[in-house]
Length: 527
Image 1 (cartoon, rainbow, N blue to C red):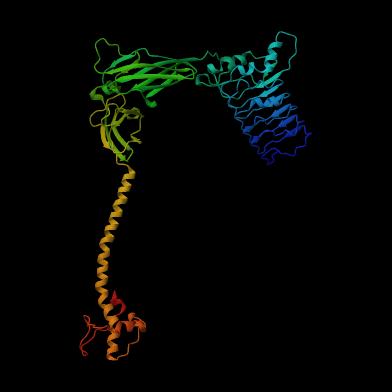
Image 2 (spheres, helix red, strand yellow; image 1 turned 60 degrees about the vertical axis):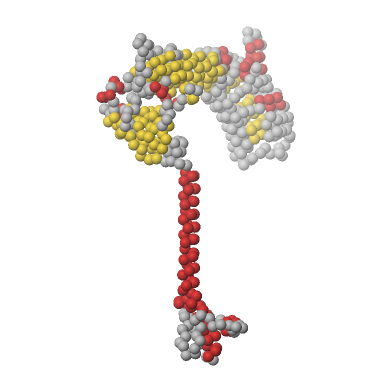
């Protein structure tokens, strides 16, 4: 108990009949975990972290009668592993993560008297799982006869059952079950669908599964410009299908679609088009699909003047905008762009509505030249909206209008998104490099010229001073802290002072002994 074991010990005595390892750190049952303990009858491995159970983990356990794996993390069990445990009577798997129970799961448990599968993640079970269970088969043969059959306890509560047509056979089995099979908790409840949530199995009647059937009361509609339109389709299917709408073979966004059940196997799906315009005309399709297949129905919409005698509202609900839709009662909306980035914008608007606390808005956004623009509904009290994931360097148009009203002049803003950020950064880096190179090119020649013009006369004069003193027979003065060139070695002075053959006096060298000579310059003068 509570031992820091990470694997099954290998030195278990062969005559051990009961093993109990709980609250430890076991993570798997490898092959032949207890093959050297063939006399084992009771194996308790509760509250560990076992996630994997090998197909041959129970090998050579012919005498095993009780296996408890409560409170582990098993998401599946190799049910054929129980072929090695024909004497097993108790199997406890509650509080695991089992989500599937295959049809052959109980086929290799002929002598089981207690099976606990409660508090797992089972949602759907076939009736065939139990019809192939030897215990159930014996109970059916013994029914109406005097033969005695041992009771078998079955625990299935605490699972999130989905009560649709896929669970029909299992629900019928639970309703008809009786001794010798006993349910530990006979009040099994549904978790979904929503209209059956919390109901007991004996309260529901489930029908057979059915492929989706889609229908619309009217498949051709003509509506005036500027009015809201709601396209409606009905879907019959079991289990409940997934429903979506398409326009020109493109999936429409879900915020304009609402789907709700109107019966146990019937759904109503509505597509809302706010302030219909000629660009909204076209063919719309309502699709539905479940695991049996899919189906669709098409609705053709025309937006224009209402023809005489036309019937406008069978598959769609058509009505005027709030306030009658008259020009005088249309709320005025002022729109501006508060912030713009490369890939998006932030809009702000102000509306002069009669009841601003109850006013909904519709945003129309798309490329400037697009015939159809995406719409977004914004609730009351919201006056800002951010749009992202736009294409760079693209011209867009965005309009804000009161819901069910067409945008008017002054309620739309046209803008162009910026260039790609990476291109801007590369351009800025290139400009910085060019500026630095130009500065260096301009600064180096000027600096070299200034240094040469200032330093050359002083260097020449100080370099030739020892030669002049030597010709006159004067001794060189002591070198002070400022005469850095006067401290050159003697060899250097000899090389500087010896005239070569045919040497002419250099520019600035005195030819008359009595002429004044410039004095030595200090280090500061050199610079």
